[in-house]
Image 1 (spheres, rainbow, N blue to C red):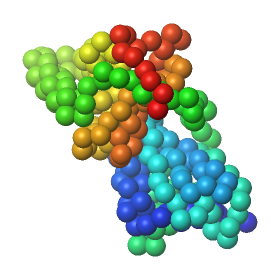
Image 2 (tube, rainbow, N blue to C red; image 1 turned 90 degrees about the vertical axis):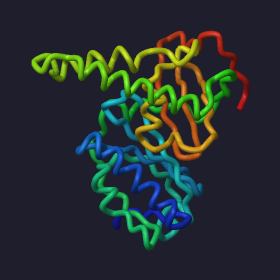
Image 3 (spheres, rainbow, N blue to C red; image 1 turned 30 degrees about the horizontal axis):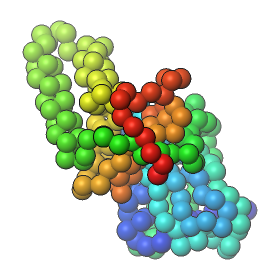
Image 4 (cartoon, rainbow, N blue to C red; image 1 turned 120 degrees about the vertical axis):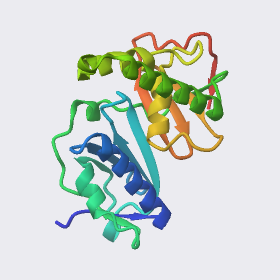
Length: 228
């Protein structure tokens, strides 16, 4: 049986997926992604987990049709991000789905499909970009203050954990969620929403989403949620 072929709605959709895969590979040369597309649907979801941020990154793309030759089966497979990127033909707006790989643990625990509620009172995109810029500046300054012998991986990771685990306002959401969105090219423009579903929170923009599974309580500080 020939490998399934994804037909993107246009070249821009193919280019956006390729750019997302490239960013994931920048942080992890052996990155894997989980692909999902509903039978008969015209949307593809690509899930990845850049290790530097400890969040789940999600990029969706519009499809012209789910599969080549009109196959109706749903798509749900974990593949090599590098092999998928190599298969993307931006000119033809297609990609060949590579052979499945043994999925990393995160691939078995994805956010829910529904039940998301919008969190009110969360900072806007410009404020989040400013917050990330300040945090990155602090990280660099603190690293510069370290003696050369103290600039170990453990030392840098310790500074990073302290900075990126801080809450955004009183939301209970860590700064690393916004940092990941900015680093992956998602935190552009003016549109941004924070959504919650059970223990999950998701920072969503028109360019992609980053999600994080919180503790059992799933609390969001003093912020209110409303149906999407």
